[in-house]
Length: 169
Image (cartoon, rainbow, N blue to C red):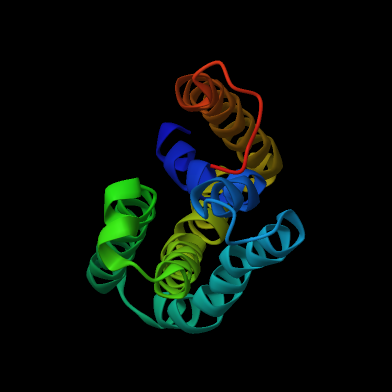
């Protein structure tokens, strides 16, 4: 259940991704446009299930582990890229809001792609070992993962708000 928490954190980032795009754009991206950009995380997940998911199902055990490791690396790099692109000095250094926004969208797409197999396929495969109780296992796993991720998101929200309720960077 705890292993599923990390993928749940990345997957539920779509809830705050629009705010991320808006807050880190320093007025370059409107609120409406920021909401539309959040779809790239879901698009990455769909692309990941279509390509990496197919590869995952065709591989043997050892190759599956290697694929999952590589996909975790893609996700971690994408998350760090989003964090680095939010730093104002980096934005000023690049001096191109379009370029920064492009990198943010690509990072969001890659994050969805990288986490797709771990979030969507692996819990079901592990749950199949529980036979007639697999539904209970998956519900328990999702419950623990979403519970822990909600606590983490609360801590993140508190740490980045700095007492300001306004967005827009």
